[in-house]
View 1 (cartoon, rainbow, N blue to C red):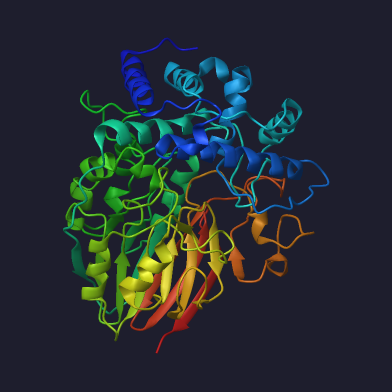
View 2: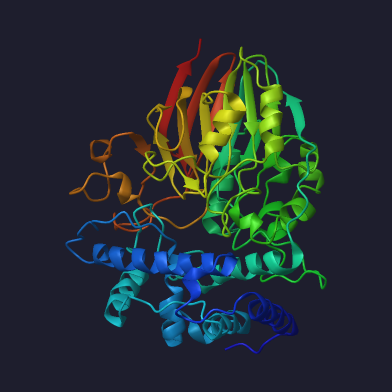
Length: 495
């Protein structure tokens, strides 16, 4: 184990003080309390249950779990790891900050008892090493960097707690840019969840730049969290990621000035947005965004709204999207009924399948968008889910979550630019196995990216990105693998 640094010691002292002040529950009373720590513990309970339900799928004959349980494996594995620290992959290399954080959470009764057994963990670990531990949404539950059994993901709750108890969020800028582009053929490359700086992200960068797009859009997520550069007054776990994995990674020499855009996300909000607003949007590269995480690009026929779905997220870990009132007013003021609308957000309005509206504490990104536009946008591009997905045209009838929203929307997920992932078997019919064919897709799904990386179709698949080109009222869309292979396309003339 690495020797503790002064930085790690200071961060742990801050967290210990915060937990001692804010959290006085014992193991029996925790669920009667609210607040961030209760929400963090609840996420561990949910993730642990999800993990237990999914582990049987990783063993032949791959039985599909009969459960609606959702959750985050990077938090769901924490209870087991806390009880069995020697089982953490590469545990001899774990930084003092991570081990100290786990001990703090244990001492303050934040970590629940695990339900997965050592035998079940062994099955998971074996599949993780083989690269065949693939979650229903395609998430790779492996042990390599940026896979879900990577202990560095614990930097996310560490930084979120530091923001909650000490630093607060960066003050939200309300200086949105309103820019125009011509009516001639204009192309856009769209990447989501791109901020690893790793080999696959580099391949996506090369393939995207080969298309020579007029605009390059990033839908957000810089990993492990989009931290600002080191600052003794505001200490974070893993400082400098926003510069290292976004700004310095960006293909700056290949893009004309004013043609690069980046957006906010849950991983940028774990350190309170300080990295995004101080270190990214302050750069000349993104100066045309006016230091703001939302705005509008407009032509004679189209309006492209890029909005911040992360800043006002209703949950501690920013997993659910929402819009600020200022953004809703901005859209209401600028949306024109005679133009087609494209919306870009980091978060998704529905779950993986496109069927379950994402609602948290009465807040819904879908409803915020409906209130802003008065209808559904014609197209909606988002990331957050680490897949490339084309959903069938979507309508929103009246439901328990709200009234009907007029219009029909073409929704696309493009969150597969760098994170290790496999084919999302949650989008395939029971009884089908990778590599999946279009006939295997569930209703409501027209395509999902699933080109195998290697010889094992149950393992990792190629990362990628999407593009769209606007020519007058015509839109042409494409998905590309990281090697530049076009895997899906569509062309539509809108009247």
